[in-house]
Image (cartoon, rainbow over all chains, first blue to last red; front, side, top):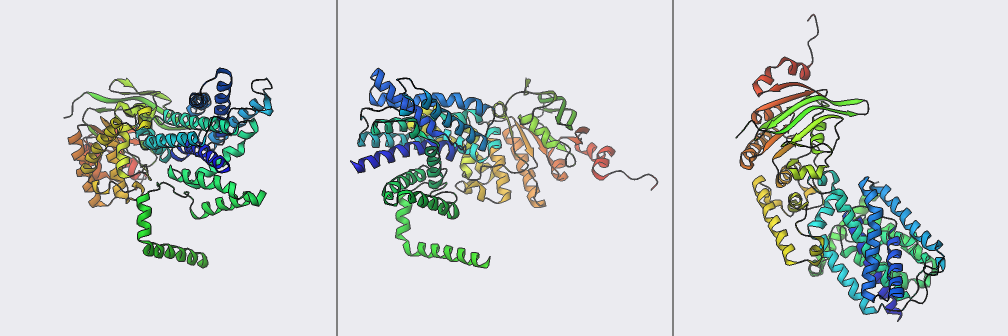
Length: 305
Length: 261
C-alpha cells in the first residue's frame, strides 16, 4: 500500500504541475498560489460527495470546474488591467493565502475551520488516479500542440508582436489560467479522496512553491519535462525520508545544480522522445565524446577566469 | 491599381507622452493600393505614428479611420483582424518557435475550432492545422525562406529574420501593410533585393503599403507619394521628385546654412 500511496501522490502532483506548465511554461505567467485552486477543488469535490452524494468522477470534475470558475473571478480583473510578471505572481500568492485563511476561519460544521474534513470515503484507487492522470496529460498534450497552444507560446515569447498579429492577450491568458486552475482542482479532489482527510494547512504556499520548482526543474515549454520532474522529485521525497530534515537540503542542492547547468530545465523547450533516446545510446561513444568535449570546454573556461 | 478611395485616413492626430508632444497635428491618408513612404530624421515620431495606427499608443486628440471605421479605442488584436499588419523596427519574431510556426501564427490567432476539440485532438483539428501549415509554406516560398522552415527562428541570420517578419505580416489577412525600416542594417545589394521583393509583394497581394525607411534610395524607388515628418509635425508631402528638391526637407535633414556665409 505504501507504493500505491507514493504513486497516487505522484499522479496528483503530475496533474497540478502539468496544469501549471500551461500557465507558466507555455503562456509565461508565474503563479505562486495554485495550491489555492487545489484547495477549492478538494473541498468542492469532497463536500459535493458528502452532502449531495455526487459520484466520484462527477465530484472531481465539479471540483475542477469550481476552481476554474474562481480563477475567472480572480483572473479577469488582473489580466484585463495588464498585470504581468512579478505582479501577477504576487497577486496569485495573495489569492492562495486568502483561500487558505478563509477556509481556516470558517468554523461552521460544514467547512470545520482549521480542523479540516476528516472521514472522507476512500474513493480514489491506484488505477483511477493513474487513469485520470493519463487522460489529463493526453488532453494537455493535444492542447499545447493545437492552435491555442501555439498562441500561448507566442504570447510568452513576444507579447507585443503576438497581440499585433491578432492574438487576444486577455483571452489567451485567461484560458490558460482557467485550464490550469481546473487541473489543480481535479488534483486536489484526487488527493482528498485518497488521503481521506483534508485541512487548510495541506494547501499552504509551500505546495504552490513546490509546483513551481518542479515545473522549472522539468523545463518550461515542455510537457514531458515537468512530467518527469514531478515523478523524480516526488519519489525522491519519499526515498530520502531517512535523511529527515536534511532531504530539503538535497532539494535545494538539486535546484541550484539545475539552475547552474541547465537553466532552461531538464527538458526545456524540448519534448522527451523515445526515438532520439534510442538513437543517443546507439551512437553512445560519439555522444560521450561530445559531452566530454563540453565538460573540458567548461572547465577550461572556468580556469581561464 | 491606385484608386482615389481612401483606405486609411488620419486627421489632426496629436500624441503626447506627459509633457512631450511626439505627434503634433498630423493629417495623412493612404489610398487603396498605394505605396506611401514616411521619412524623417530620428525622433521625428514615425514609429509612434505606426504605433498609434496599430493601437499600441492611444492618441491624445484626433481621429484615425480605416475603411471608414474608427480605430480609436480598439485593441491591437482587433485592429489586426480588421486587416492592418506590420513589421517592427527592432525585429520581433518568436525566437524559440520554428520559422513555420512563426508564419502560421497570424492565421490561427483566432483558432478555427473550440478548445474542447483541441484537447480531444479530433481529426478536424489536425486537418485545420494542416491547411494552415500549407498556406504558411506558400508564404515561405514567396519570401524565399522555405528551406529554413524547421529552424528555430531566433537562430536565423539577421537578413532572413527580416524576411520572416515580412512573411509573418503577410500571413495575416491584410489590406494595409506597415513596414518599419525593413532595410535597416542592409548593404546596397541587399537593399536592391528588398526593393524588388517589396515591389513584387505590392503587385501580387494587391495591398496598400506604408514604408518607414532611412535608405532614401529604397523609398524613392518604391513609393509613389512620400510624407516627411519632423519633430512630430508634417513637413512636406508629395511625389518623390518634389520631396527631393523641397528646401524644407533639405533643411531638416542637413541643417541650415548660417547667415553671412
